[in-house]
Image (tube, rainbow over the protein chains, first blue to last red):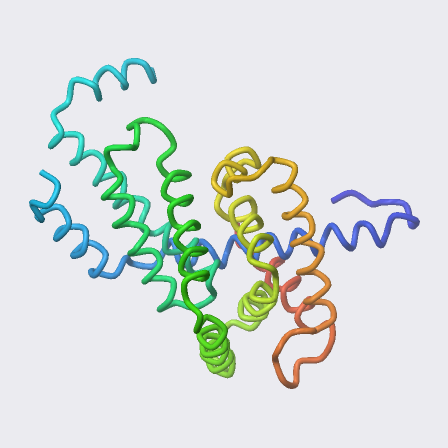
Length: 55
Length: 203
């Protein structure tokens, strides 16, 4: 980031904090995305696929 | 390109179509889990929600047009499920309390990364609509228009919810105004700033 005039310092500070919150939020989300998917999910989907219910 | 895909999809048997649908759905599971986790703040409750949404999507697969935005479609199913669960359960307040207690126990773990838990606690204090809008736009990678479709509201409404959520989060974090004992004002924001800087530097 380039240097700003002194008058805009609080605004820059807000922007900086908002960006930090944004980074953390994405990290929080991506952390779960990167977790291995519990087998349960695929088991449920497999069972749903096999069930003759709506064929 | 989309037209070619549509034609190809139209010529498919149900079984072939189901197979493609399922493959795409499986790819979305990690994202559905992340949306559910950030929305509810509770891992166990979130996986129940994500599983319900996955099954609902599978059951409704015939109403989905292959080649359109399946991520947005499944996210919409998940958020509708979230709100209908919430409405149905008269015990919800109690469940929320239990979930909050579990979260606080997890926060007491000295190994846990500090800033992340503080953000999670602050997120829990936002109204559902604001939290949802912020997650979709700020982490889920959706445009405001897509988020509006998912939430079933106007684009302007999403924009104002996101903006209010951001402001509220900053306020909560700066005030240290969440349920954590011993944490002094400003500490949460400081650790988040430091963490974000570290993350950006690592890129």
